[in-house]
Length: 332
Length: 274
Image (cartoon, rainbow over the protein chains, first blue to last red):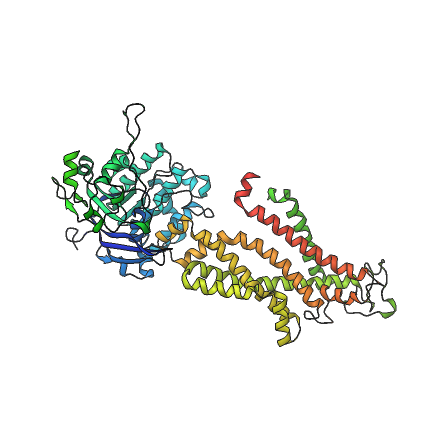
């Protein structure tokens, strides 16, 4: 199979319904995207817009009673049709995930080498001694200082940044095809954030895997990923190459996100802009565009049905889900 | 370890429990008098050098009865708690790992079983199978199953909500492997504490059953039956009731203190503030 015809990851019209006290509600409303080997894709949006849910859906780790439709193909194999045993063989081996909170993502009762060795023993069937040696190599690869001494350390003996490095080494242990990083630096000090992200990007490039980076930090996205998708209300509202999208923000939500960003050089006393209102509760999402209630350019047709994706020139891969983006641009 | 020695209730509890275990072990090969020996001329003797705690209405040596009776209490405690751990913990882990209707079925069954007090189910069982040690142990053990199932499921659910179980799943581990390697070790401390408490409850329940004549049958000595036999001599020899009563109280107290101490010592959050 050639990499040209078959994408590494292909998500088609992914819909996920979750059970709530209000019955089943659609939390992902037809997410579609593709990634090639070596691609880095960023997923932006505020809390509750479906970023993490998309990641969990790809990993097959949705809550038990979630209803899924659409397809998620990794190297051509549809993950949504796999049984749990096959999925277990994929997770950790072909796809891996890094979590937001390195403090709680490691088991406090096991030394770290055991936790790194775990996926190796599981997927590659190597014995404990070899696995421990591999764990050391991995720790050195993620540049954990004094890696040899730290093999037998317990998670509480490491700092947040060090723990996140351990998490990365666990995720990379079996050299997966795709790495999903769900806000990997949100819980870290600002000074450490950059180091960890650069490390992730470097390792991803070395191994030639795909990276799906989830974050609400715009500045961070700009440096780290080639393409960006902006999500709101369970749908992708805008997507494109990072530069093109940062250059020309087409969707009112994206514009709001950028306007709300604190920047150096703002006049003293300037108030940061905010997007009026809150993300609506999931069971109150409007039928049409989920942003309708907070959008100052809303018209009746927005509320009828989810708007179609429209292409934003000049690049061929910049898409926006808003019928009024051209008139917005004229206003801006 | 140092922390353990500084914990007063843990130290006191451990000493009492050690005494209980030591007396049970000692009684296996030595007791002041053979335990069933009846010595009518010497009945109701006061405490003396020959009979440390005196003799009962049949002239049996109280000290020997107490020593050998401790075997019974320990046996009941171990087996009843063993049944509870052996069946309750897997059920709780299963409910927590599977969720959904499996959890509902397991937990509602546990609620149902829980609604019958141990004594009641013991009386029910003895009315069917006749009184005896095995029946009373079984009854107490059955009562322990839902106790451990509930505790396990509650603690396991808390562990499942932690990121490291999600991380383990993302690494490709099956739910059963995660249950074994991550969930069980993290709920173990809760279970150990609960086990000591249930051990104490089992000793009490066995004493109560034997007192009612449903537990250990003569000639095997039991603290509960000693209480029962002492009842008829309440006014001639009140001490006959005091000795087994104190023995039961100390055993239960020791286990509860030890459980209390373990609760503090095994909780990592408390260890930092101490």
